[in-house]
Image 1 (cartoon, rainbow, N blue to C red):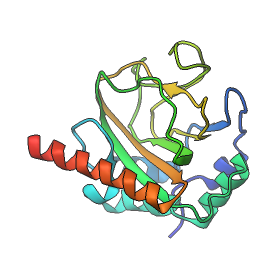
Image 2 (cartoon, rainbow, N blue to C red; image 1 turned 180 degrees about the vertical axis):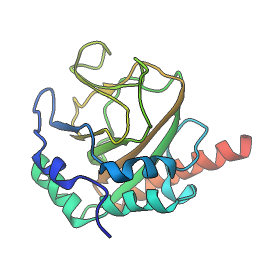
Image 3 (cartoon, rainbow, N blue to C red; image 1 turned 30 degrees about the horizontal axis):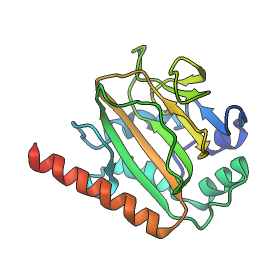
Image 4 (tube, one colour; image 1 turned 90 degrees about the vertical axis):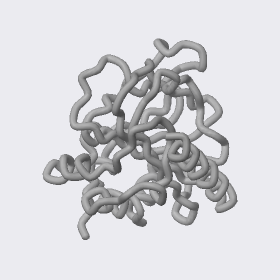
Length: 206
């Protein structure tokens, strides 16, 4: 099965070093597949992150999952960020709905080595809901770049103490896949447990 990711685009992307290491690929999914992948994105109508084990996976979306779970994808990230993730556990979570409380400035947990976000919306015209790479943890308007949440937009960054990011609140459908390479299997199990518990509670309380 051929990759639906444009691996050459990822390989050729320039890594910015300030305020921390990151790169952006605006159209990371091959044009002939991107709309099918978006159409097959699991139906998520509530906020929060969901494990892929807790949603229905359809064929075209499964192709994207298969494309990120490869040695080639890991090798690109290893070389880009000079962090060997060839054998580290990979966690994949999904978001389908953004709430007003989402998007707050934060940096990712120390159990994560690299974070990759791929946005899977047919288009993105809203001025809000666009991820910003931030210079500090206090001002959402003090940013170096803003990532459109449109079809196949990808941002990847090395997780650091100053890896601040966030977005101006947006309420509504906002689909994305988040891929994290983690420090250990223990960290992987812990993250999956809490995401799975959250999904079950949301389903239970409707």
